[in-house]
Length: 146
Image 1 (tube, rainbow, N blue to C red):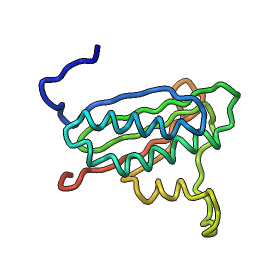
Image 2: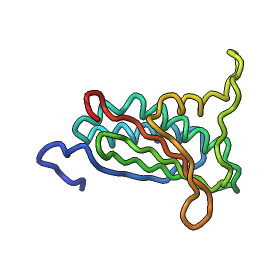
Image 3: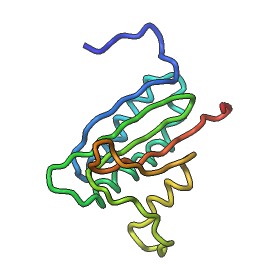
Image 4: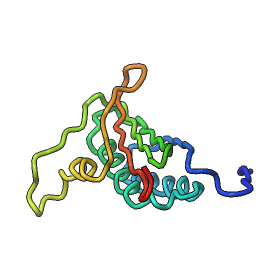
C-alpha cells in the first residue's frame, strides 16, 4: 500500500526506475516523471521542460547506445533546491556528441542541441564500476526562485 502523506511534501525527493531499451520507454519515462513531480509541492512547474529533456535523453540511450541485447537503461530523477536533476544511465561508454546543424527536413540530430539550449546545465559521466555512462541534465531553478 502506498505511503499516505498528511500534506504535499516539500520540493525535494528522488526516484529511479529501470526501463527496457525500447522506443516506448521515453513515453513510460515521461509518465513516471509526471507522477513523481505531481507528488512534490511546486513540481508541476518543472514538468514541461523536464519531460522534453527526459524524452531526448532516453531516446538517445535507446537509439544510440551500442550495447548487447537485453540491456536496460536506468532513469533517475531528483529534485533539490528547486532544480530537477535527470539522469539516464546506459551500458555504453560512448559519450553523446552534439551534431552539426541539420537541415530542416532531417528527422533526427537535434536532440542534444535541444538539451543544450533548455537545460540549466548538462553533462556526461562514467558510471561507478566502469561499465557505461550516465547523461544528466538540470531543469530550473523554478520561476521566482534561485
